[in-house]
Length: 406
Image (cartoon, rainbow, N blue to C red):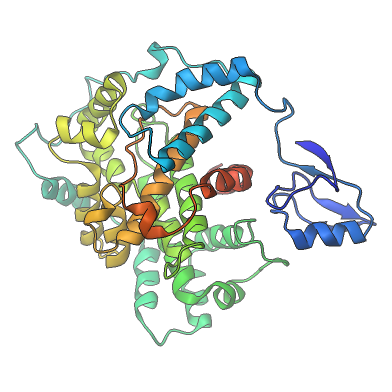
């Protein structure tokens, strides 16, 4: 957190503490500042604001050099001349350099590797089973939350009213609470608190709110994955970051529904979770192989398993009767140019890579798979937006995560 003179405050900065005047809150912590906000505060005599930022200031040359050397291994697989990749790399180096200045110790080679778990047993050996076998085995032993199907039913009914949608979602108190937290977060930036689901439906839209509900209700399905397999906090932090980046990018692209993209980002790696449940030994082996050889995880999956998590996701989501659009986006995000929903899958691919780049500074250890050449042209937006997104939403993501996963 840093204190900045009102004359130096820029649009896009994030408020680090509630802004109070005369006992009245003018703007809550986590709000993204706009030109209008800044102008109003100047007129009200506000002289300085506390905004999100590192107390260490800009990184020095030594920290940048260390960050450059550390981060470049995670970009070995992709074209460094690509303008999108250049932006992603700059983001990774800058954030890593800041962390180094703050005292973060770069992981050693040993710490970058995962430990093989020889006592874990897979459903089958390679080439002795299929993706369908994995999904069928999972469906037999686990049931999906009832609220998921109730929400899905009301989404598909074109005659559903705002009150009916709110009543269905409200059947699950935990889900309702999470949705209201999300709607009241800086991600939406509504000027006043939304304290009931009917109001949320009116502001966001019925189908949009239900799409968010589908995503949030899915999270609880994967609570039983053993911690020795994967750090689930890190997994969901990456997923939530990807979801937020998806929504923000989608808002700048014509014809794309931001809430659908948030849910797609939140669930984009759901296939990996199925693999952890049914193929734990092989799932860990793919992580070992990916990290030791500095190749993208999806490439390691194809080599070790003979298939990858996007194929598992497609099969599982189809069995769950997930909305076809979401199924297509999630299962195509590593190859959007081959998808019938290229624009949406492309947004998810960009967001996934951006989330991985940001995660390097938090100990993330996966090589970026890259972005299809034609995706950025199809999206029609400036590559500079990537740095802007990270600067504006990094703090908010951490706050959202603490609300949903603590």
